[in-house]
Amino acid sequence: MVNSSRGVSRRRFLLGAAGSAALASSGRVAQALPGADRASAAGESTVPAVGPHQAGIDTPLQAAAIFTAYTLAAGTTRLEISRLMQLWTDDISRLTRGQPALGDPVPELAAVPARLTATVGFGPGVFAAAGLQRARPSWLRPLPAFTGDQLEARWSDGDLLVQLCADDPVTLAHADQVLTSTASSFATVAWQQHGFQRARGMTPEGTVGRNLMGFVDGIVNPSPGTADFDSVVWNPGRPAWLKGGSCLIVRRIRMDLGRWSSLSTRQREEVFGRTAADGSPLSGGTPHDRPDLEARDANGLSAIPLFSHVRLAAPAQPGERLLRRPFNYDSGQTPNGPDAGLIFAAYCADPDRQYVAMQRRLADHDLLSSWVTAVGSAVFAVPPGFGQGGYLGESLLRS
Ligand code: HEM
Image (cartoon, rainbow, N blue to C red; front, side, top):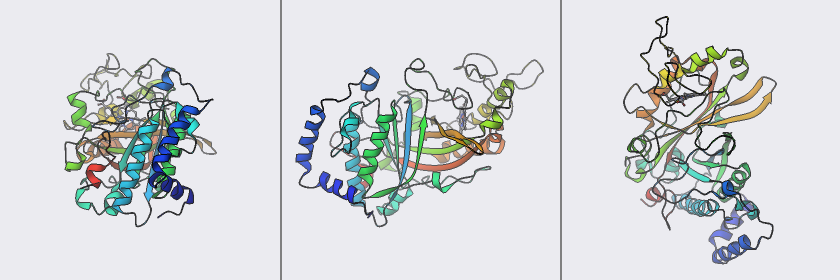
């Protein structure tokens, strides 16, 4: 058990006899705040936390994200993990509606939900601690080593993961404070990564964002609400408890933006196989037209270069598809240049079938690898959503 007096006392407060009194008073706090922020339409927007799937997967990309991995305290039991999941479920249900959490350390900051979502994942450590190894999906282990990886422990692995996304950084920081405080008697932070897209309102709704290399990133993705999306993203029930859940892969990929800036626009386009202006395939058409991998240019060469990113990322097998939910990161300038890149976050039903071969192709042959390096890697099983009265991970933890 982690020795955090704040966490323990907050947990006692939440779980003890004071619980119902806390519930009532927390409601009063929310209503009584005279200077409470009045949210704009964008600030008031909410994404329901309840449903068959966790929110934050089929949700249109928000402006900012915090990915936090936690290490369970030694000796944590299945019961304690269930407790934490119940507490997080309660926190998430309130915060995503724009209400303070129970015993919220800073209730004033809860008033602007800004499409907040919280998506929880389980690393291998949950199954070991809970004595549930038989329920662990066979793919839930670190990804194999790929050519060029320079993985650092400070960005890799973890027992639990929370992906927080919102259109506002203050909302996000507050949700992180609440969830990390709730976790503090069960787990410590292993790593945290902050990512961003363009701020909401800066481009028309639905615009696909750009990465820090300047390219439109996220064009080819399954569309939520389609049978295609369902088959790419949601686990069909292998193992049974994970039905309606997913797998989240988080790779921290550093970009060498200094060297990238010395390339011409044409050279950059050949690396990706799409135009810099709007992301149209180099084979022609509009951004949403499929790249024609057979097309030739005037010289008879492949219009989409043989070692370009989109050619190598295109599925070599029918099921080799992902939902990409990437965020940029920029940790600032250093004496060695900018520390910036992409938090490549992707969801799929089964990474062994849908991800590993694609990543190997990219690592071995993609022109892009000359300017990007994976420095972090983690894989999580994302349990299905929860209904009213239910809690995160219930189908696993009650089994
Ligand atoms: C810093 C690293 C990366 C950057 C900057 C990047 C950027 C891009 C860009 C600009 C596109 C074209 C537009 C689009 O469809 O979104 C693209 C497509 C794609 N990328 Fe990446 N990507 C990176 C890493 C990865 C990784 C690690 C994977 C998976 C292992 C991946 C998988 C894909 C897929 C599946 C597509 C769509 C391919 C298709 O046309 O079918 N990318 N990426």
